[in-house]
Amino acid sequence: MYGNSGTDKNSTCEHFAGIDENRINPNTKSCQECEIEGTDWVALRMCLTCGHVGCCDSSEGLHATKHFEQTGHPAMVALPNKQWRWCYVHKRYS
Image (cartoon, rainbow, N blue to C red; front, top):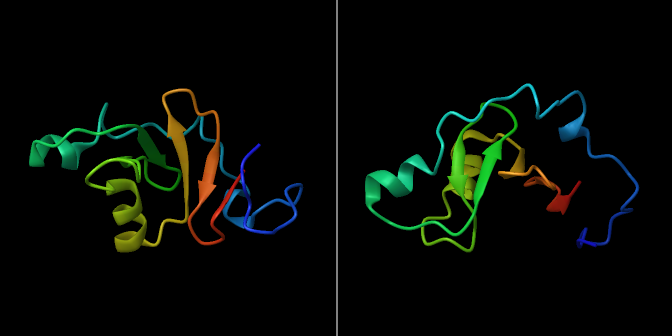
């Protein structure tokens, strides 16, 4: 369904090991950076390390990716339905 940059789609990324996204709560209801900047977001992503909510790469701010670049937190989940997860380090879906 989603690309995985040539890796085995059945393999498990170590950055998701032990993470239960149902135990991590979003810090905000929307992208806080977009609200501060007065920009719109397309979709939201939540960091699976700290709960930071940022906008997706289709949004002007790219705040979820910027959060990874600033913190090194490797994994996120799509909000609101948590339908899929993404590892920034391996550039693949889970």
